[in-house]
Length: 462
Image (cartoon, rainbow, N blue to C red; front, side, top):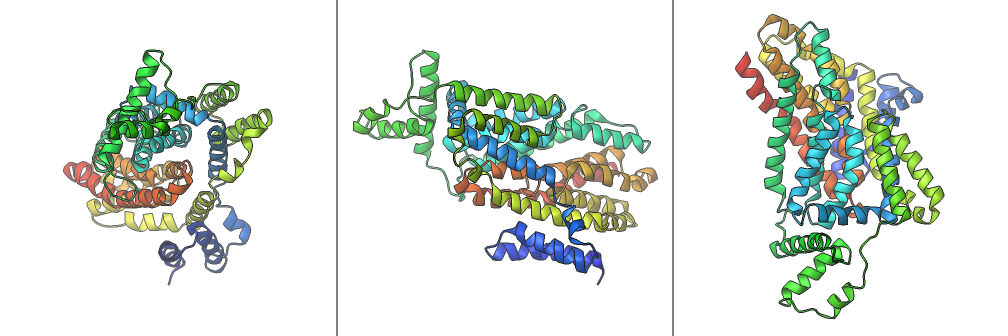
């Protein structure tokens, strides 16, 4: 049995064992990386650890630590309140607003993890407070960021068009951007229709509770518009609306006491936290500073200025998620460093049927990108497609756009940076369910996206 086959089979075994046994998949993957690396590939421990995603580790720790501080000092509550007022009670529009904002940020040149790292914490908090399915919210944030990144000045767009040009083909930036954008919108429409009235367990949401939630949101927006103070946290407003609805509008003792709970105010601590978040966005998106280290720097400054709000913040860092993602990516990077991924791609490229080879290349892009770097796979697999493109048996635009879409829409996988950020910024009690849901979505797209894009974009042009 070849070393490459052993490596791939062990990876499959890691998923199987972690699924049926209560063990962190990342811990299992780290052990597997050490065993396979030293016994099969002849790599020492330092070589195995060379594949550990240090930058992803810093991003996850830095961002989740910063937003743990923001939750502790009430900044997230203030943002949720402000968002409720901004949409005038139309809470159902928030997922689409997050989709647009994420897409706009990446379309002007931000890398997708930076955009998701900035938007996901507030979006996921808003989803919980307003009974929006958090899987739907996270999915739309990731897909918005992914779609925008294929604009002519977006990171993925620049890379893809550059690789196409390097291989002596005329680039097609508009078709690439529109293809990714339309795909993302269609997927989000489907996800919205499936998840908007579903909870994390797959059951239908209580329509009366949802109506009470929307009514409370509208009440908050109305109070802001008329300058009449509306007190209480968003959750308290929801509960108050439910009590008023069930009592026919009569105030009871619990409702009377709710008025004594002040709405979150923008004090000095929350104002400085907001300024830190804005600074993070500017430094990461405009000056291209590392988002992880920048987030850690902002968090450290906030801790020094307001040490009281830092209590318990480190414990809220998603250490389980960090271990899981770090272990899986380390193992995949080991296979990549040993050439397993490249040899697998070369064997596919040697197939005699161009259409079948194109489909398999799209599948490879989806599988690898779901666990590793979308940027890297775009730069690797497009050159592998050159033999088909030069032969003229497969359309250049169709294949490249299909490969780009297949390799990027799977970024909602919790094993990718964007999916990991969504899980890390979820409520702790919901993380396991959100992780499993995103894993199902991600793995489903690994199968569906290449097949659909192949049928729609490649077959008609061949």
